Length: 129
Image (cartoon, rainbow, N blue to C red; front, top):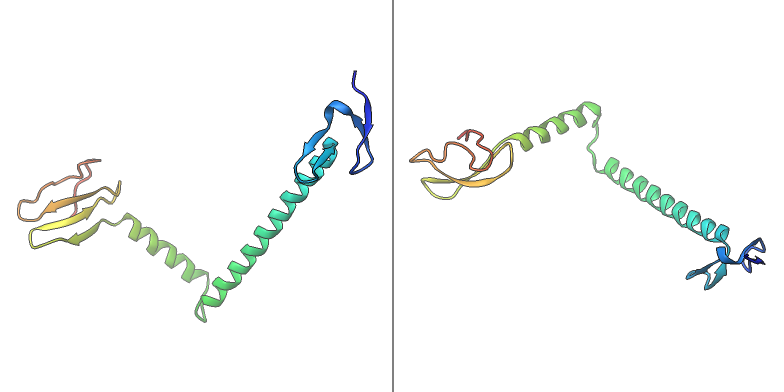
């Protein structure tokens, strides 16, 4: 049988076996005090993230050139998608190319004189050179 005790932080009564030793308050407090403290921390964190997001949005707006609109955003998104899906090629020397697969992004060496490998060694997608 638990004894009802008054919390030193909020003066609420609670059972003695429900009290917690809180590291922030550095004393035994009731469950409601712990819950209130955690909610305040969560709310403070949300407000901080919201303020940071607003600052970042303002910075992005300042960086955009005059006349920038939603059409430009859509064009930029489509172009970045196209770049992601395209195969990457980087010439090593006259007969070798460092090829990046457009499907799995695996990097391998493609020999232009022999035309090998004709497919990605990892996912078997045809190499488009």
